[in-house]
Image 1 (cartoon, rainbow, N blue to C red):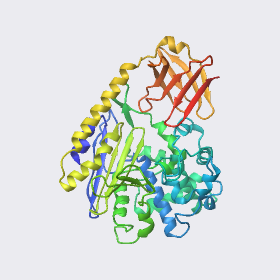
Image 2: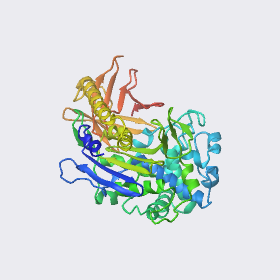
Image 3: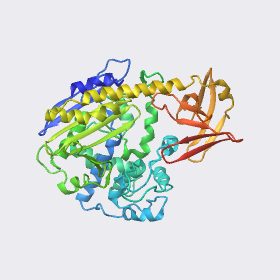
Image 4: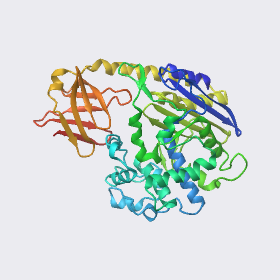
Length: 464
């Protein structure tokens, strides 16, 4: 485990906290590296990191508690519990049961750009309104499609059941505190950014355009606050090990008391949709049998914070790893293999895979850098309009700062590079650490446009 954590330095991650629990006892809980570049403070077992999508499992635990209390069941239609719940497709809306909110199996697409670019005005209520504009792109159970907005609806539905008169965000926050954090003894875990940043916490980092670790803009991570049931929690290794220990004990607390009945807890691990040959997704949890041993886990990714929590039910072993830099997903991605090697004295592969993945990542970063012009080509920049707008993603203001071309999206801004593409078009690409890689293709028609795409959608900004 120490070797895995220290390998983070070769991957450009400033700090790692790691914890291991076996047979109900914490074997290790500490950190390596630094909490913030340029400062000496070391992360430890109590350092808060953004756990991002690991929050989803805690949200489904809240739902499981309500199932246990018979306030709802997994097959209850959501519209019976949350009257204003709506998707862009009426038939799909009526078909969504509680278990579908966080199964990644309803065919609802990700569409993260729509809340990342416009988070300044987003609230829990408006995030649900946004969900009501979205259309499924595949049939129920047909395809694994990860939707943060649907996961947010899961948490807000649970909160609404408990506190029906409260604002959605407050209802969820209070429900999580009283139903999850307090009973499990997760005293440091919080959904409050201000509280987290005021204490023992880790900053966000990401490679700059030349591949060197740099501070990343933490403020952009606040975009998840209106969708916090999907990924807004801060937690520490020690707190997350309390949660993992409860999962391993199948609902029992360390003093032997029952926190939750076994059936609703374990139902969250039942496959709802296949991710691949040996991996399935349940409700905010994945089960991986790649190496013949069932491993329950989930990861989390936000700017500069990447994590994973893992437990092996048959071996009564669990682990948590929290990192404070991109590409922390490299460490997280090979951490499961490393744990299995140590536990079963398996063939050593994880370290070499991590080194190879890091080398590939930085080689690709360097190759992309060679294609970019920084500062952006002044001739191409001069052709841009000063203002662009898109109905879904808001506005872009284009300006110059010395030789640099700046794209200002309101909530965040970045210098952009330029690149001439093989088809003759020109792209402008954001290069702010943590927000690098947003590509805007300049239109070739008579009207000035910039187009950005995700895996399934195209957004055209038109000159104002």
